[in-house]
Image (tube, one colour):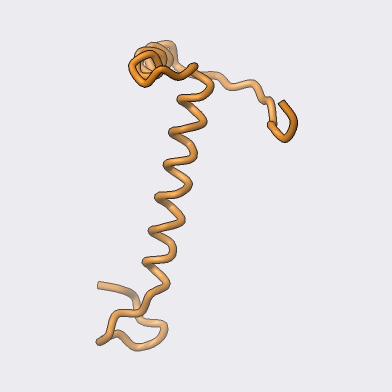
Length: 66
């Protein structure tokens, strides 16, 4: 598939079985399930990073969020 990066990944056999069962429930391949989970994690991180850049009303510039 054009535009895709192939790589070798080592994974704990117990984790593999969990992901494999989850993928079957979601009607995905294991590869598709791992990509789905990674994409969710990246999107969650982006949302959290955007939320961290919003300054609270009572917060001055450069002050850490409570």
